[in-house]
Length: 129
Image 1 (cartoon, rainbow, N blue to C red):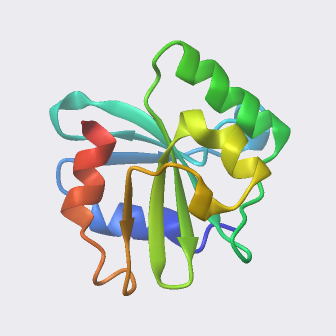
Image 2 (spheres, one colour):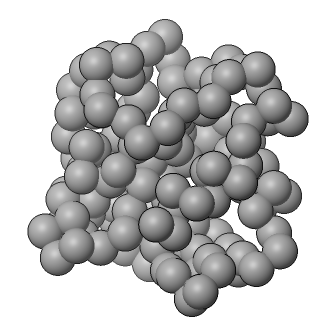
């Protein structure tokens, strides 16, 4: 479950962005949900998750993929939705997220009040910075 984040990111980060959904069964295990190319040609990957309680379910293959990319300085993120809040984590935190409470893992940004109140400009800036 992705909390409709795939659609929300595509809708709110549209101008100057190109999004490609990735169907993992055809690509390889652990590959994130979406690849993006943002302003300035900056490319990266996002895994979208909906929290259950204060936890997210990341498969061991997803954690391994994120860790491999982090080792070579790949641009990877995990976007987590809990109710009307959004947290954006660096992919390098995948193991910590898989093992614990999302509130205890260092994040890049958090937004509250639902998708219409989230600062999409700030979300986009974090993805390409």
